[in-house]
Image (cartoon, protein in one colour):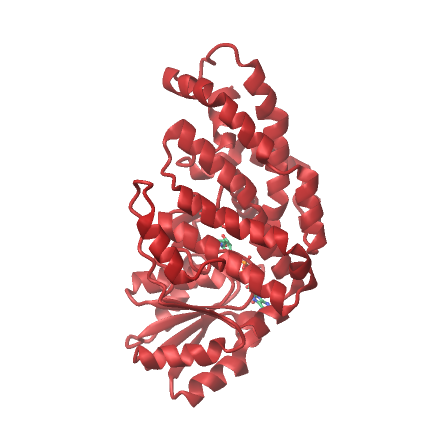
Length: 404
Ligand SMILES: NC(=O)C1=CN([C@@H]2O[C@H](COP(=O)(O)OP(=O)(O)OC[C@H]3O[C@@H](n4cnc5c(N)ncnc54)[C@H](OP(=O)(O)O)[C@@H]3O)[C@@H](O)[C@H]2O)C=CC1
Ligand SMILES: O=C(CO)COP(=O)(O)O
Ligand code: NI
């Protein structure tokens, strides 16, 4: 992280944005080869004697001996719950996974340990929250910014819905394990960070046009973590320890930014809503899932293109209030037109995003992920409905301008 945890906590306390920031319950964040030794020391310090590991086959295999030897040497008693994949072979943060964890967690356990990437963390975050026990994060891949946040995007009855649960009390990320993670997961982590270009733009727009809760400090935290990844893209592309550490620190900082707001305003805009829409369609068609960061990496240039091709000209053409727009919104649009133009101008070109994604070995087009043009077109018209409480530019275009 660019700032230490203590510095972020202190800066958040000094922030005069007017919004009550959520407390940061994270007591330790370790990124390095000493992570598992530090985890055992932390467990002993907290007098946690019974821990329950939540993982899946691949994620447990990624840490097994290095983590379990440390736990056993530290006389920490542990159980292991390996979350089972669905019929398509994917581990999903859904009802069945949550019930499996609830059923397999011993009654007397002190803490859950999420050993995995985004999905395992969301299953563990929600389950531990409901059992009123803390959880510790052990990331196995730098693939998402969902390690330090409190939100849990769950698939409930086929619909992806983010439920605010709890953040981990500590994070122990072993850089040796992270460096061994699949290269596409490292690219996915960069993709989840690149998505902040449009998530931050949508958040700014939502604040101007709909008074969405906004904090300049949280915006700056997220923007700083994004810029650090862009500045160190060569290191990240090389996949060495230095690049992995930069990426992991950025993902942790972006998660803390979400945590401070108690919502994912800073990290999830229309690019994420497209991704969630595609994810649900893949579930419906029983297709193998695609990494979250790969989807949002690809959807970011699509959203930038859409905004610059559709929204930009509109700002110059709108002479009178469209029937579907109320007077108050029309007045806000006119008052903020210049700022919105600047916001759109500040976005990198779609080509620049795709060049960066290609540099880290990520997908650049939806077709590479099995997402056909028809699904992309449909998602541009409908995906905003997945988060009707987010006044993104896509929401604005679909609900207040291009209404049938
Ligand atoms: N809470 C939040 O704030 C956020 C949540 N998310 C959520 O995260 C989820 C996606 O997480 P993501 O990390 O992309 O993907 P997953 O967590 O779904 O991981 C995909 C698979 O990668 C495999 N894997 C993980 N680590 C390793 C490793 N080190 N070595 C080998 N294989 C490994 C596992 O395969 P297998 O399953 O086959 O064992 C794992 O299930 C989405 O649901 C997204 O909504 C994303 C961002 C923020
Ligand atoms: O993926 C996320 C941030 O990167 C979380 O987004 P949602 O709140 O839309 O699930
Ligand atoms: Ni994301």
